[in-house]
Image 1 (cartoon, chains in turn blue, cyan):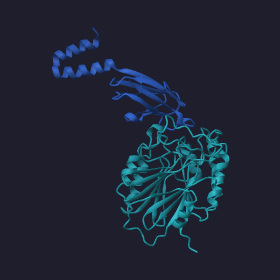
Image 2 (cartoon, rainbow over the protein chains, first blue to last red; image 1 turned 45 degrees about the horizontal axis):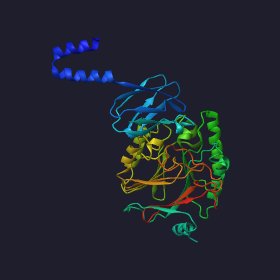
Image 3 (tube, rainbow over the protein chains, first blue to last red; image 1 turned 90 degrees about the vertical axis):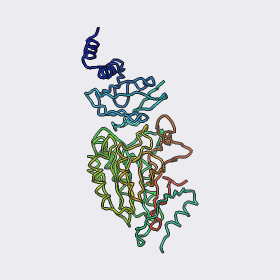
Image 4 (cartoon, chains in turn cyan, brown; image 1 turned 60 degrees about the vertical axis):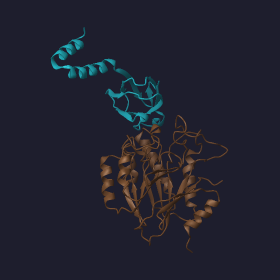
Amino acid sequence: MSVDVQRRRMLCASTGIALCAALGAGLSARAEEKVIRVSARKFVFTPSEIALKKGEPVVFEFTTQDVFMGFNLPEFKTRSDIVPGKVMRMPLTPDRAGTFTFLCDVFCGDGHESMSGKIVVT
Amino acid sequence: MTIDRRQFLKLSALGGGAVFASSLAGCASMSAGEPDFYFVQLSDTHWGFSGPAVNPDARGTLPKAIAAVNALSVEPDFIVFTGDLTHTTDDPVERRKRLKEFKEIASGLKNKTVHFMAGEHDAALDNGAAWKEFFGETHYTFDHKGVHFIAVDNVSDPAARIGEEQLAWLKADLARQPKDARIVVLTHRPLFDLAPEWDWATRDGAQAIDMLMPFSNVTVFYGHIHQENHQMTGHIAHHSAKSLIFPLPAPKSQPKRDPIKWDAAAPYRGLGFREVEAEAKDAKYDIKEMPVVKA
């Protein structure tokens, strides 16, 4: 039995059902968290095509060793800065299927206009 | 002899030019004594760009446009450049060289009343530092014959924000205007979400539009998207201008916003500048699109 599950059972016994349910949901979500790692450099995202499942929560982790950039997914009205030397996290649960464009929304030089990719949600 | 600009535009339109009338609501306090006037908008000249497939005359197009403006039969009251005067470069020395060359070419305009604005290609990589050395502040106002012009900088921040400081400046400026003032906003990027998938937006543009919304006579002229586009946000009209380097496809008409290739059978197609006539009587603006070279 994992430490997490042991702690969960002990807490359930001592703090009641409501708190137990809430804590259980949080742990469950964390256990299922799917991480999509995306690196950015002038003027490409890697990967530039990302497959996701409708309703499946994911967390993007953005990194760059280059200049300050941005990741913008307009159809889902969400974005993140991409900061050199940091891991930037952005949660997303796609609520519809389709192909959606993402782009760099921080001007980063000659070639910025072509810095984009697509997310395919099935 | 007094030349009637409206009559002139109508006659010109018969020769093939398109006139777009941007009707605005009536303006009760418009000064009856203010005369009509017109100005010329040029945009997105991208001096320093090289790409023979989309413009084999990259170094010749701007001088041709300057010559075309100088040849207008009626001299405009003033001229505005709505940004991307130069094409971007990572090299600060080259950036200044391009800005210097652009300024020298633009000095060939007969009309010396010229208002310059920055685009992200000019200003985003150094927050407008080089641009300011040549052209001064990136946001400013001026008044002309009863119209209040506001130049808004949404490019010096590489994240395409106007920014809190400039928004506060805008708010203070608007507080001094009557609600029926004739206001023209000049900017580079669209203030509204025209096509965020193509970076054709201003991240905090909605805040500027909200500030402008209480004013009954507001029109926005901008560049960035290298084509004519006319849209409304409420009662505010937004008119984008053609480029003088290469046209871009219609918003979201294809997966990527790749430049439209040069057509040797129709050189300079999709490029041009515009005349904007401000009519005092009806508080409206007539727009006439002009080619770089006449067929």
